[in-house]
Image 1: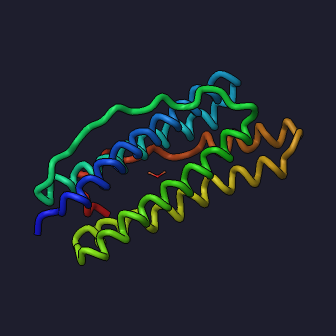
Image 2: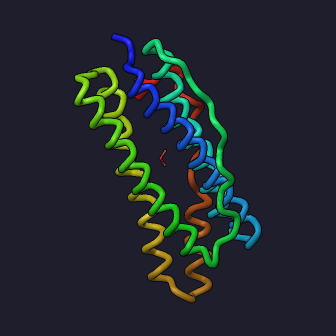
Length: 175
Ligand code: FEO
């Protein structure tokens, strides 16, 4: 079954939004590099790659279902933050927005009875739990740390140990 035009449009919009998400995290990475928090910069630079991989899942799914990918202009990301906690708070809020957007696509897929799209989106529902949890946890740890500089550097080192992100998925149903 080919993807409907309406679902194709929503997936193209989300493909663009995932690329925008990648850009936001690269912007945060540049901010953290600038204030010498190399561990947080490392984490964000990997998150940039992870968001690119999310975009590629939509890219693949649209083609796999007989649709046409429509690449669009990507907005410039925020460049400066008042503090590390503001950046992580922004990341957490952004992830909640991504979740809400994915749910909206899912609502349409369910309305249309598009089982393939629902199955592909199932991956994103669980992924978003992880995405929100990761950013919320760092935000909460930073709240707890407050002005304690050794605490901040300890957290920075922890985030600097994030393992590499794999290559983009070869198909939209990749585990
Ligand atoms: Fe692609 Fe962080 O959600």
